[in-house]
Amino acid sequence: MAKEKHDMELRPNPRTGRYRLISANWKMNLNHLEAIQATQKLSFALRPADYSYTEISIHPPFTDLRPLQLLIDSDRMRFSLGAQNCHFEPNGAYTGEVSAPMLSRLNVSYVIVGHSERRQYFFETDEVVRAKVEAVFRSQMTPIICVGESFDERQRGETETKLRAQVDSAVSFLAPELAERCVVAYEPIWAIGSGVSAKAEDAQQGAVTIRTVFESLWGKAVASKVRIQYGGSVNPTNAADFMQLDDVDGLLVGTAALDPESFARIIQA
Ligand code: PEP
Image (cartoon, rainbow, N blue to C red; front, side, top):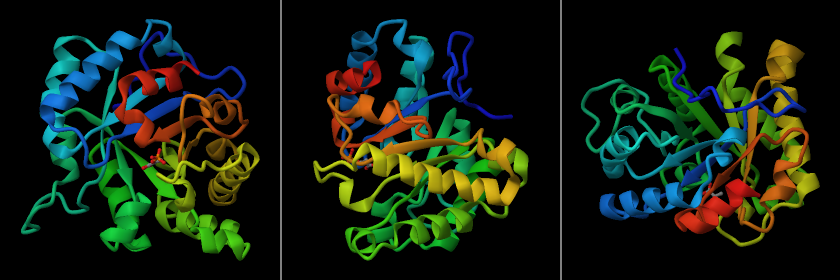
């Protein structure tokens, strides 16, 4: 069964019927002591009503997962635990890697798969991303599949082709009941960590392209359930512009999520 925390008080967006999801990708930042402090500060900064509108997932480095799991459980915090990556094999001679079953055992609900930094610095191909999507589902977690075009691809008018190819490769093998549970993050590579976000209309267009791939594979009913996040230089000032879009159901936040107060303001936006 899925481990998403759609607790009783979490309400779907009345316009779309989908649950919103805002995720903090801490990347390789915050040791386990800093992680505990940041999570406590975030919890203090949020009001009970903030959890009614959106699910919040925190994706710390692997070494922080166990302490955060204990903190979230013992203080009954309403955060979902996330990971930034996993290996596609369940176990074996893969020195330095962490598997999906290991994450699942720590109550991880969401795993980011195919982040552009992993594709760029760790040479993850579409085939590897696909295998990881399968591994995450096999361990009853939900993948957050990152896709996005580079600056040059956008300049050449290849955004749609790139998004279609990345999404198709990552999900086309899934059964419809898993396809509809996917979360896809549209993250234009040029917008990540650059301080220059996409325009709202470009984020909406990217989300529509992604949803259309699901529609062509499984039809409207499945496509309408898929949650799509926007990621790339989201901050407290621009967050609301993206959350109002028809096809954007949440945000994947890097830099601004490292500061609990600014991440809280994004959630409240
Ligand atoms: C990310 O790493 O997924 C991201 C969106 O980073 P930033 O918010 O810093 O652009």
